[in-house]
Image 1 (cartoon, helix red, strand yellow):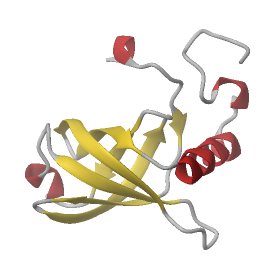
Image 2 (tube, rainbow, N blue to C red; image 1 turned 90 degrees about the vertical axis):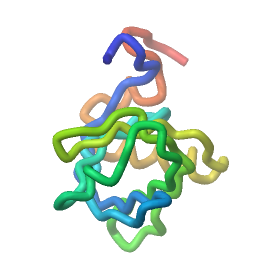
Image 3 (cartoon, helix red, strand yellow; image 1 turned 180 degrees about the vertical axis):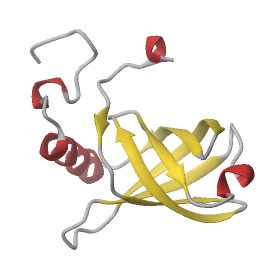
Image 4 (tube, rainbow, N blue to C red; image 1 turned 60 degrees about the vertical axis):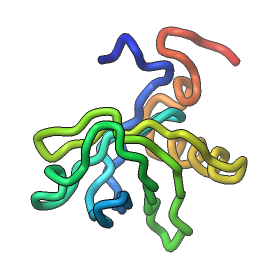
Length: 120
């Protein structure tokens, strides 16, 4: 799976809500990149989330900040986890995502860059 990734992923355990046609599901963000995220859903919600489902992912960064909202697609699911690909986000969300990743990573130089690359 890592061969398809274009960006470095950052571990980030914060609350999320995944909304799809089948409902709204609470969970926890496991990791995030500029292109997508891995989330853990609570309870049996993963059984209702299918690969290919279009959804909205709300990431709650904490400290009273407004949640980041992403139009997204489920690219894989199983064992209470779902891989999410971001389809669209506005410029403000993109900037806030970068700031979140910079804040929680121990490797800020890798955020927003393709694996193995350095510089801008």
